[in-house]
Length: 75
Figure 1 (cartoon, rainbow, N blue to C red):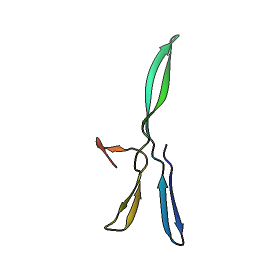
Figure 2 (cartoon, one colour):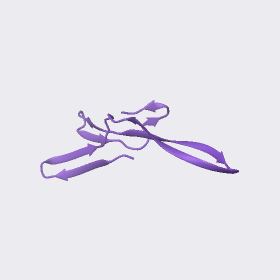
Figure 3 (cartoon, one colour):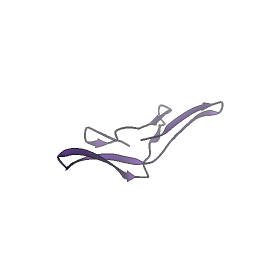
């Protein structure tokens, strides 16, 4: 889960985001004839940059969601 906040104030625009990257893994376990799906949250990093600036076009960008697109990491 990501938290991205953008606020417009009289002196400009403020953008902020958390820096944690995590994934959720699923594992099927069978016990007593029934199947249980166990989900585990795994922290990959606490140092990701989710907010950036495109200075040539004066645009701020914030990312969230999938951090890998077509097997290429973004960021």
